[in-house]
Length: 292
Image 1: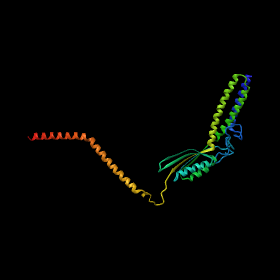
Image 2: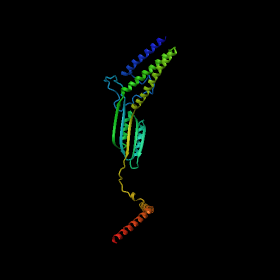
Image 3: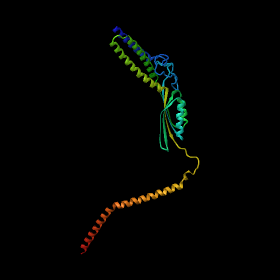
Image 4: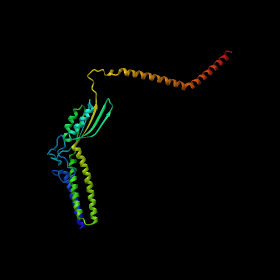
């Protein structure tokens, strides 16, 4: 019975390996609708561009839905930064996306805002068109990465690992000895670990496919005034008085510092004065000796 059990286990693993190789090259139709349960992929939300592969492809992916990861970038200049940032948030939420991160920095004279947006791929072009209207576009980029093969391969691997898990559970139910149970559970733990790793990788990949990443940078610019106003004369008298008081205070402060300096230097000045007197007396004495 023990040899028969391990023969069945070996046969299961061999069949599973063959199934994985087959599924990697030619996936089953309707994948994602059954056979696994890991947040069923949302088909149809893939790309704002061409969604289907050419049926004449020779790599085993003919008729397979194309999976693209889109990355876009926009740099704009706007006169009203606050309104523009509010519009970016509104446009993003209205499209079914979300703001992953946002930053606002700078001074009163020039402020800059940066956003990282996650937008449903099917509405990417629509969102980009609306954001472009918020200011003067300085940079506009759009990149795509085809991950169809990786996407299909992960789906096939997950389905295969789930079938291995089911078969190992059936074998475990038939195991009779402790040794057989431990070996089957060891293999089952390995399969489940691989299943969890591939499932996490698939969810991350699917999220990047379903939601495009858009980086938006907005710099604030000020428009020249089109009207003449006397705003510069407002409070001129009070500002003039304040300036005069400031100047007088600065002058008094300077005089005070000069007086303090004189007092600090007084001992050195007295010493220099005494030395000068002694030098003069010696000089006169020498001159009087020469004359005599």
